[in-house]
Image (cartoon, rainbow, N blue to C red; front, side, top):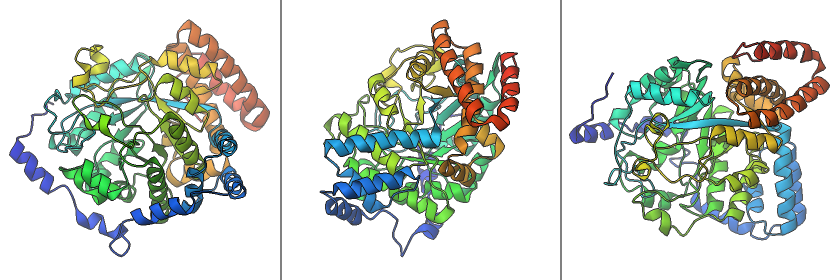
Length: 495
């Protein structure tokens, strides 16, 4: 099926019919949304000079895997004492190991379209960027991109769409179904997560039926005035339609949702508070917050001068601090660092509570199968900091003592939403994940790894098996039977 470009007049008509106010109203409180700018600023000011004793109390609370309150998070954000920061960083690492163990989940983003009706000042995909080469993948091209990703060993991807009538729910479901049905010698993509524009509940129900994993929408900035400034036109200029996108997703039955902010648009401390308030409101209405939180930093993009002019750019030290604060504030939540960051920065941040990252990332439309960097700046959204191949990244993780997990078992065993959050809070999920990580890592090492990476991986595999034997003797025999099947060529086996 070929997708025909939509006429400008049809686009204008489509925009008028997208936003449904009646799907926002039920979540408002006295006509107000859950982000009170003045309240956030007041809390940050009130806790400008936090007491050491209070910070240590807050750290201890986080170590019990309890979500922090806004006042507590505001205090952590204002810590400047080097000794206390070191304690916070150490606690962040402990929490990650307690909840998620030493696993790192890898994925790849697959950009399917860069047509967009919005005019976001920081994005090279914006409607009025004449330098951008516009393109939308056909289903055949989607299949070729998927094959290229599978051939490197990826099993989990996130598909990314521009907001445009050509990329409507029908295009989304068709491309997702194409991805799932595409197979190469060792298998296919087992889980498709989605980064797409806010949708209405009816369309979200259709999206759920495709069998997606997580639905991801970033607010970009939670500060109302800044949001209005950087989103001058298009559907995205409606703050609340975007703010409640994941509430509608939960209403539609998608219980794995993901939030994020683009750090560099406004004060990073405010944005961390916004992410916390977003988590709290989702928990208030649905009993569960986001499955993951992302915190990309503003990066240079083709013909996008705004990104160089921003006065809110986040330093490396502040970036590491905000990651640690988020890990302490929402200790049971997954945290994603992206290939926007350099390899060095990603290595440093892994110790602060990161659970997921992308690898071998290409963000040009059609960039995986075409394997060309020609005019890449004209077809990608921003400039990447780490473009290493998956094998090299995994080898580095193994060298650092991390096991790379390709597991998607939770989605297929019903360990999503409330179920997985409760298990994470109790420290139970990490053992399912550890066993499945070993099984899927064994698969990947045998099918895709270079000799150098496989050698490093074997050391991690041996260590993990010994830990399972020691800590979970009741299921060890069953686990080893599954492991033996993997060694003998069986695939996609999981607990």
